[in-house]
Image (tube, rainbow, N blue to C red; front, side, top):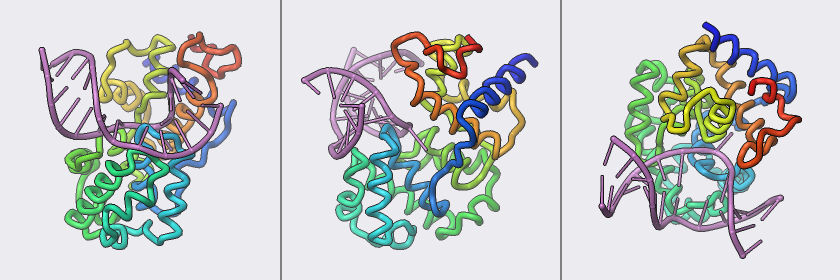
Length: 216
DNA sequence: CACCAGGCAAGTA
DNA sequence: TACTTGCATGGT
């Protein structure tokens, strides 16, 4: 299929231009999950500050995050924006982890196939498709392709998907044409985000310096 | 000053 | 079903 070759060429172009990304930056799967919630519609720079505070307070561990009052948790993550909302969302996630696997993330993966696990994650208030897939790929190392606003912008901009493409359809473009490989999906999403940040794909035409220009 | 950032849920018509 | 709005800080 031609799309497979196109997607592979795009990947190689980005990797050649930017190099390996080394995602997800975190010390533990739980920290990755917390970061996934905090980065919802928020710059990673602001998320890092919140993660630093959580680390200092020794709260990047599910049992202690469960124990701390929500208002205290909210103050810790103030820099990440939507902080009252996200404190509630983190509490929801921690409750889910307690009830579903007693904080044993490996057991979570062992007990459910990835698609059932995705449904469970989506049932948590505050966990939508991107956050669920981010948790599955970067924290639980399942071969799930993460799609986000950058992915859509880039693919739409290059005429590869129509304007009103929904999350699942965009995700299918990748999963239907690439092998289900954790390392590949990890790096591919990371590269799309990094390209999206560096090359102004918002209003102007794609810059001449964009590694993806040749795919227009 | 305006605008954006690695979304999501709830409300409205 | 298909929009719209609230959530909120910090950088450019």
